[in-house]
Structure formats: structure tokens, C-alpha cells
Length: 598
Ligand SMILES: [Zn+2]
Figure (spheres, helix red, strand yellow):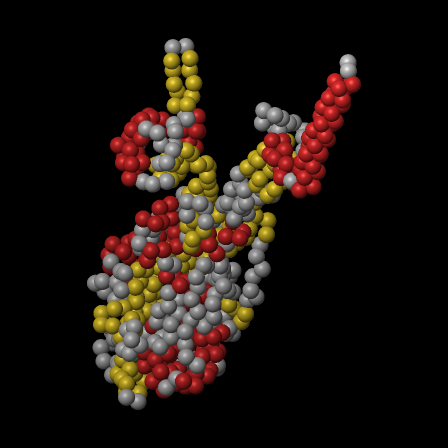
């Protein structure tokens, strides 16, 4: 090799060296860049290969009645959709889907053609049908068989909320939408208790995507089932109340009506029914006004049923029940207004000499008005307040109205007289049921409630803190008033509520509906009601029936008392409450040492 050749080789080697150095520099620069700047990105990419996301489905809590009958529960279901952008052959997709899950292929086709993007083809179907769609269509060519996904057709597995009791207690329960979001009622009010949280776990997988046994797991979202909720409702009592209201609807075609059954000792609501009702399984197909829980959310003028509060106040304030007032003609002028009594047989021209017994038994407005005036606005209002009429019941319902009554210093004399017989005050049927429960419970008010407790796996684990009972009137006043309410049913306007073998205490109400302008009353628009308790000598049930705008009659005695009687009679049978016998009567009278009714 000559010197010239050697020099060329050296030069080339040098250049090669420079080239290698450059390449090495570039590679290490890249490595440094990756290490320093894009490490996170690459680590994530590696993780994606190593970790698989696993979703854990959980369920919303169940709502039970007091005996463990489910009123609302979640079951697994599936819904099938089309993504119109991915559909390759609409005709074929519709035909294959119909072959897999049934249904009219023409309808599927129309929906796919008319829709854009995601179109629902079948909602809330059996999850086994969903599995079929997920598996796909069986393609056979000779010996070769394979399931193929139908392009553009997908399945969503989710939970469906069902209400096994149908329309029963629908307004109490409320409902959820298809995604399980609570929209109304107890479902909405107790969403925090009932709501579940689907879990998400990352699990280590092998290169083929199979989960490695005994490998690491990372919990992204802790899965949590919803808690169960137990209501005080007894589904059988609920059905009894619903049936009675259905009969009222058949006969009097009211705009709406409600019935409440309460245990006066505990304040627990055993039944609460509203008509017209709706099916929470299909709530959106019913007019929204059917969703309203009128029994707790709608204010009305209670009318004569409120006379019980006026008389309770009189008795508790030491006014003699026998002090006599006069109702000479059934009409009386107070200021510029005329008070009127509604007169029924045997009274054709005024109730005559009226005491507290007669105010209750024959529903004398003028007597109640005079008693109210004797008590005075301040004192009477204190009792309306003590009976809980002006507060929110906090019984556990989604929407509860607060009673309305102006401050006492704003009452005119005629205003005070009107409030004495239940006009010029607005309350809910639940407020009134609670008043009669207080009388039944010897004058002690136990606040109403719809919630028995919360728990899991169908068992109660926690009972809610209850508001403390409070005494509203003395035991003696309550006993005297009960005696009058029994007279009302035995001899007075409440005769239609009588039940053989049991003492019934109760009061009728027929109130005109105030016009929305706040001046005067609507012609021919009434609320007919009957509220009471049974058995009067050992109260088990307080029952309120309130019927809004009945047709044919507007009297509580005709419209509401028979429904009260029906509910009371069936409850007495269902709960095996013993009837009075001549023997039990003698023992009772001997023990009490008096001949009084209660
Ligand atoms: Zn009268």
C-alpha cells in the first residue's frame, strides 16, 4: 500500500469516526430527551399495555315497605342502539337484529334511516337478548362457522329501576330516568342513601390482554352499592286506601283526592294515596300533574275539620264545654259580612242553643266563630301553631308545603270568626291528619314520618333520629274532644263513618275553594273531607280522606265519610283489632268508673 493510499484510508476512517460520533450523539440526545421530557408519556403507554380497565357494576338501593315488600328495585337489563355512522347495510342490520331479539325489522330500519348518530332501537330488554346482540350474527360457510358483530349495532348493559307495586304509592316513591338518576319523590329526596357508585379497577394483564392471576390491582373508583331504604308504608294498607279512592273516583269524578293512614302513637304513615295516579315504571307517559303528592304538597282550606282545633283550644284554656252560645237562624252579621251555617236535618232554621258538643256534632259555624272570638286571635293562633299546622312536617317527602295563616295582629274580627271554622287558613291534608293523630294520642303530638330506617341486604341497620313528641293539649281536653268526635259519628254529620262494633271518632268538612285572586270563593268548587280515628277508645289508625272538586255532591258526609269507613273497616280486619263485645264493654266501664263513651 502506498503512502497516498494510506492517507486516503486515514481520511475515510476519520470521516467515518465523525459520522459515528454524530449518530451516537443523536441517539443519546434522543434518549436524554425521552428520559427527561417524554418519560411520563411512554410510561403511560407501557401501562396501557400492562393494565386493563375492569368496570364493576353496582346497584341502587332497594326501597321496601315496613314488612320488607320491595316497592322500588334495580335489575340488570340491556338496551340496543345503532350508530348510524357505522351502519354498513341498514336493511341487513335491521333484519338480523329482528332475528336475534324479535321486533319489527321495518321499524328498526325506519329508525336507523331517520336517525343520526346514536339511535335507540330497543330499550330495557332482557339482558340475555343483549348478550345475543353482543355475540353477533352466526355466519356459516361450509364447515366454517363464526359469529360476526353486526356493524353499527351496539348494546349497553345497565340497571333498570322497577316498581313492582305499579301505581300504588307512586307519588310517594317518585321515579328515576333510564340512567338511574332520581327525578322525583322519595327516590329524589333520599338519593344520597340509595345512590350506588360503579367501580373501576386496573388489573395487570399479559401481552394477550388476559388478567394475570395474583397480580397487582389498582382501584381507580371504589365500587359501592346503594343503601336500602325502609318506609313506614304497609303495602296492604296502601292497597286498601287506593281501592277506597278508586271507588270515590268512580262515583264522584273529583279533580283529585287523597287518603292518609297514620299510627297516632308513633306518627308513622301506614298509607298515603293520591288519585289520579301514574305508573312510575313509565312515568314520562303520564301527565306531570299526576306526579304531584297533593297530600303533602298542596294547600287547601280545611273548613269544618279545623273546628276540632278551635274546640281543643277552648277546652285546654278551661272554657266549659257546656257554655252556651246561640245560633238562632243559622245566619249572623259580623261587621259587614254574614256568617252562615250549613243546616241539615233536624235543624232547618238555626242550631239553637249551641255548646262545644254541638259545634262538633252538627258542625255549627256560628258557634265555632263565637268560640274563636272568645279565645281571641293570639290565643287561637298559638294552638294552630302548637298542632304543627304552620310548620313543615319534615316527614321525609320530597316536597312538603308549610301551612299558611297571617299573623294574629292582622286578623279582623270576621277573619278571626272565619278561622274558627276553618276558612282563611291554608294547610295540607297531612297537617290535618297530624292534628287528629294528636287528639287520638291523648293530646301529645308525635310528628309524622314516612321513613322507618336504612340498611342493606334487606335488613334495617339504622333508624333515623325522630323529632321529640310534644304535648299540645291536656289529656283531659283530648278525652273530652274525642267524646265529641264520637258523638259526631254516632248522632251527627259523620254517621256515614259508623262501623258496627267499634267506636269511631271523626269530623266532616265541606269547604269552598277560594278563588285564585284571593277575593271570594269559586262557585260550585268544594273540598269534601272526613278526618278521624278508630277505635276511639284505643286509637290504632288516624285516617284522613280529602276529595278535591267532587261532582254530584260536595258534602264530606256523602263523599268522604264512606271512603273513611271503608278504609277503617278493612284496616280493623287486616290488623285483627278486636271489636267491642257486651262483656268487654262492661269491663271497660267498670275500670273507668264512668259512663262516658271514652
Ligand atoms: Zn249553627
